[in-house]
Length: 208
Image (cartoon, rainbow, N blue to C red; front, top):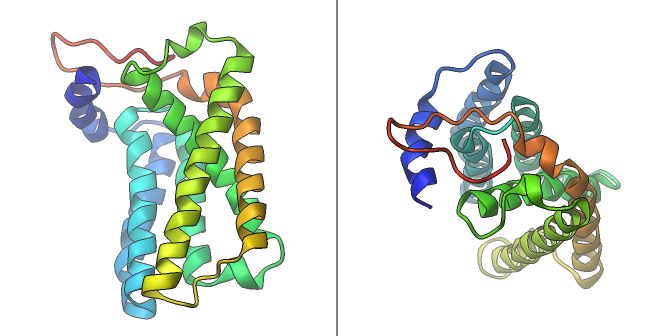
């Protein structure tokens, strides 16, 4: 945990290079999207886009591979606007596609964080089957929290937020499938880290 605390600030504030400019552009677009969504669509849209902002900030804090960083930022931004514009309920199959892709990417993020804080071993030493199981478990957990948040939103904030038994089971199935598939990409995504450590400290224990 200490290494993440000491490297988070310098890593987040590092000067971008190469493909990192693309990811940072997506972060700026997400930041701009927050007031736009709030003004145009209200408080729930504001909350959704603020959550998307969290999703695009974390990979930069961790200094993850630029390719993965770009994919996660794009997915988080698209997912946020898909909710605001109600594409999940109006575009056939869009809901399940985003669940598959976004939860898959987020499960990689959770596994990498787990290795960085020492909860999981060095990802380079884990067999592929273990990475797949870990990612799948993380995806199912993220999906469960997601569905509970949707229920809370539907019940207490905005009844237009769609929930239902079939939708929930389908979403969880897509979440798990996406996370299991992403397990094959954990080692690649966690490599080529751009961590900026302060003097006298070492980067975390995840694969690099």
